[in-house]
Length: 115
Ligand code: 5GP
Image (cartoon, rainbow, N blue to C red; front, side, top):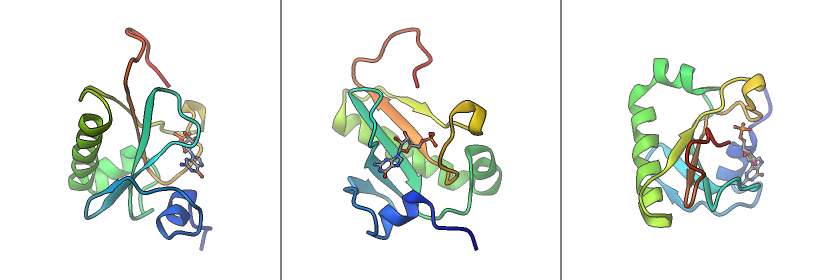
């Protein structure tokens, strides 16, 4: 068995990080190294899927649940608009292979791809 991901360890309370919201199958935390005024992570409770491509193929309803949670968080923590990023693969900057969405909001540069 592989080691639990950092996000599983946070969910299980082994690594401190406030869980700021949750749904039945997903939860949200603040990114430890924010790249925008609001930078949250929306994460499935299960580490079954490594990236968004696997998630979309295996459980599209869970992907939709994550997007719904991202939308609620952007309303609560910013003006409602948000950028959703799924880094997919190491060359794209993915460092944690437990699928997660970056929710960026608040005063983002127009025209930039962010990150
Ligand atoms: P990735 O690079 O895989 O797309 O995103 C992983 C994200 O997880 C990074 O933005 C990183 O800052 C964040 N992260 C890594 N370790 C921790 C941690 O222990 N706590 C929190 N809150 N975020 C973390």
